[in-house]
Structures are given as C-alpha cells and as structure tokens.
Length: 103
Image (cartoon, rainbow, N blue to C red; front, side, top):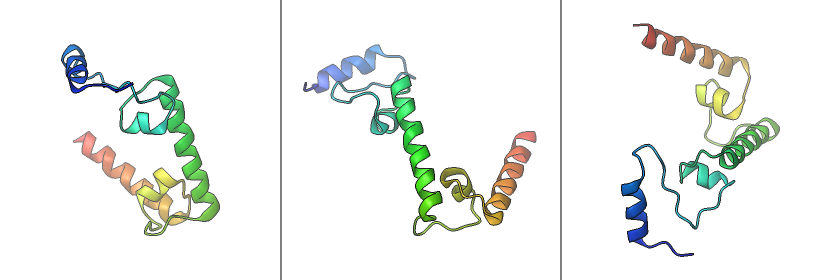
C-alpha cells in the first residue's frame, strides 16, 4: 500500500504532538520501526529488546567491535563489557550524573 504525502500530512495534523506517525508500509515487531518509526507498541519494544540483547551477546562472545575502547561508559552500558576499566568508567559516569541532578 502506497501512502501519499497528503495522507501523512492529515495524520500529522490530526495526531497529538507526542504521538509518532507510522507509515502504513512499516510493519510492527521490527527493530527499524522502533528506532526510525518511533513506535513503542509491545511488538516493537520486544524487537528492540531482542536486538539489544543479541548485540550485547555478540560483544561478549567476540569482543568489542573495532573502534570501541575499554574503559568507557559506552562499552559498559551498550555492549555489556564488565572489565574493571569499564566498570570504573560507569561508576564515574553515574556519580557525575547524580552530581548534575543534585545541584
């Protein structure tokens, strides 16, 4: 089914500001619909969880991807690395975050 620009404009005007507009050709239950379509239905959230879990498991199995360094918050949070350097980076990030919100 092809969606015309007029149909999309009508949906945007009728929808509240916070509601995402998913084109009809996007299917639910896909990671791309969660990320690019901003859909948060149960099927799309489950697809995002599966993708994130699989990505972390690959990182644990094969090591960090090229260009990602140990001792970073990104490696700890997004890739599941639990080496001492990454744990220290996460601790430092969390402390800085709490200090920003405390002041």
